[in-house]
Image (cartoon, rainbow, N blue to C red; front, side):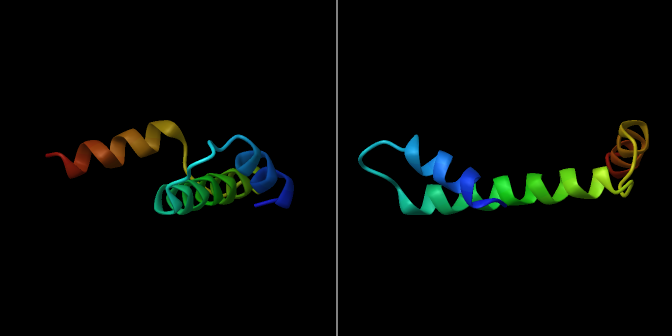
Length: 59
């Protein structure tokens, strides 16, 4: 995650901040950033394969 992304998030926060919620949001954004980097490198699976795997779990 880039410093500028964190700065943008902090700038949009209200005056009273729930630190736990902020940490959870930072963690989520970091995971999304990591996933996007993996996809850019050609790693990961297609949407169709993901749906197929999820269907198997629900059966």
